[in-house]
Length: 316
Image 1 (tube, rainbow, N blue to C red):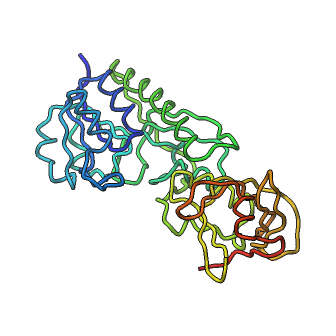
Image 2 (image 1 turned 30 degrees about the vertical axis):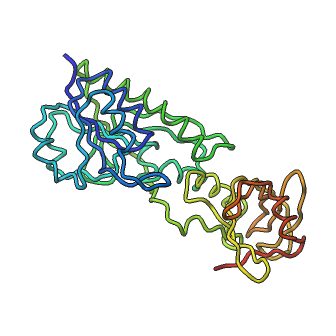
Image 3 (image 1 turned 90 degrees about the vertical axis):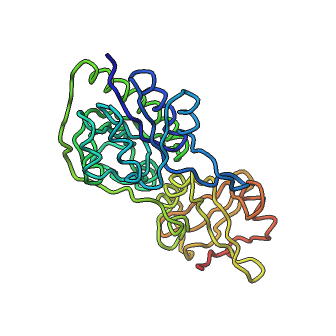
């Protein structure tokens, strides 16, 4: 007989996992975050996992707080919970409900990058390898015993969006193996080893690029990591006013210069705006001014009359 399960998840990236759990197990219930205003019209609508679960004929609970539906979840016969990007903390009494426990798919090689933003932080922090971990949830932050891990290289051209696109199917592959082994009676609990690192949730402050504080490579990594938001921005001084401009694509350059960080070193039609950083310089290749479409950085410089040797970034 198939394992009886409950799936906990919310965003689009969790939908392939919901579909897998529906296929391989006897899925009793899906639990998501509460319906919220979404889209331009800010109309209240179901999250992607809830919408797909209803299409599959799976009952759904969407409580504001998990404890609000504790009795309903406790009354549901299930042996295993699976959580993917659910976004809520499980209390010990919830963790004790299923006979086997609750598994989580985390997008890093634990104990590295524990926290809410492992994909983005792997890029911001300059990792060259990452992967997925399927582990048993415990009351601590992503510190439960491991069932399985799968590793992959981070391409130098990857950003948060492309890395998510690679990690999601890798996680589905890993969870498929785990569910198959559990169905066959195998239960693995391997303690995490090594020095933990943190992957905290990103804040708006993280999106402000400061050439005086960071090296060109660090700024480039930050732009890569913030591809899914919050969008990285730099402040230009234009006509006596500060203009915040989104930075979409960059490339570090090891050029040496005695100019002050933030100074425009050169402007090239095919490459963009070269800006001095704390170490090295950074090519701004594609930008997006407020209310405008993405454009080549050179076109932005031309439209603003940006000159070599001027255009120093300013702080708010």
